[in-house]
Length: 156
Image 1 (cartoon, rainbow, N blue to C red):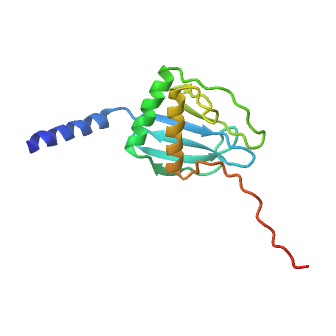
Image 2 (image 1 turned 180 degrees about the horizontal axis):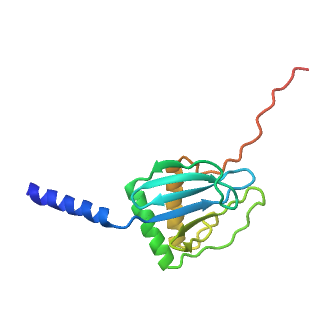
Image 3 (image 1 turned 30 degrees about the vertical axis):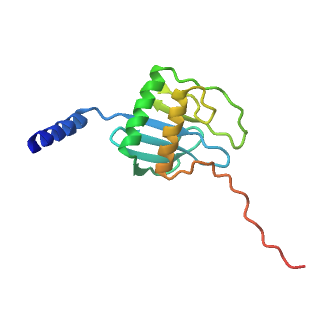
């Protein structure tokens, strides 16, 4: 019995190791108040985040991080479903200074803007996956719209 379990585990590891390594890139444009970024996610769970300008050009060094296996598996499965099912997006109004766009680029396919309301379940699944990956990378789920620091009041 132990030999059969060990053989099954060994076969599973060999199949995973033999599978080609896949990757996708999450691109956030940033805004006048937030830094844009690119997150490259590999099918083995390795990932990196690089600050980027509105045109996608790197603005700093990449920082490596790991994405949980369950999140990576769901992300790539949802990408395949979204691409095959033609995930729909809808345009939405955005502030000229606070508006951002977020897309996933995978195998020459670009997702709808994930910062707009999801038009179907395929797009909603990608929004959820990207949110988890962002959180794992250390990016807050909310845009960084900081109020100016409070100024001390001088006594009269």
